[in-house]
Image (cartoon, rainbow, N blue to C red; front, top):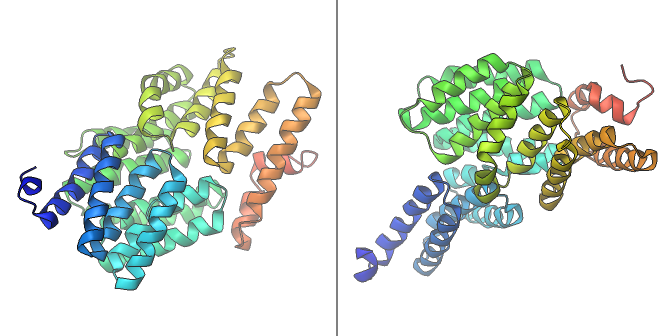
Length: 347
């Protein structure tokens, strides 16, 4: 406020840049977006391209968390172009951060792996701990989804070994990412134990809590603790809807599966809500799975056929985006994939 009164525009821009992270770390996305726009305008007026790129990438981070994915993609595109122009290694890495999960959830597998490779490579050169840690876990997580568990575990093991040396401000990020990876990999007990360590870390910010919330929900579902799965989602559903829209469809999907496991009649309604939220954001990776579940719940043969046909079409399109032969083959060996693409041959 003092910088504004004294018209110290560069100091004002730096302050706004930092305040964005404060609001984002608290989950106050509307205020973070507002301050981000003010910072970007100041950097444009000052002609400071590296800081403009940084501000755009930060805005993209919080827009992506909040589920405003097209806005995030536009901001990262501009930030990446500026960072290439200014030969800013940190900026190149940061502008590709968060793109991996977006492209993957939108069913663009090769593109997701490509941008994660870029974020990790330039993050290593620039010493960017976030991409060195989180983006490697995301890369490993995609490999788990594709059925390449051994390769994923090897990458995760390297990250876990390095994570022991990070400072307290990054420890909760490393632990929560590790927790999510274990949950995704079918190790729910480990996931829950590490999520507790993440929760006890000295610095725990909003999006770090999102990672280990996901881990806990997935872990409890894997353990058959369906009532606890439902409780966790119900307690956080408002927060997810207001401030973490990117994570909302997947949490709704897990919620619906837990309801289905307990034979609760609301399961179909929750699956339909998950479908609507996924469709709104173009999250095709979730959509084929949600549609398959809806087909299981339908008593109408024509509706079942239509749902399975739509799910199969989406899945076939996703398979076409997996160029690496070994990853495509491991993905096609997944039982749920075989059940949809070739039901007669499925186990």
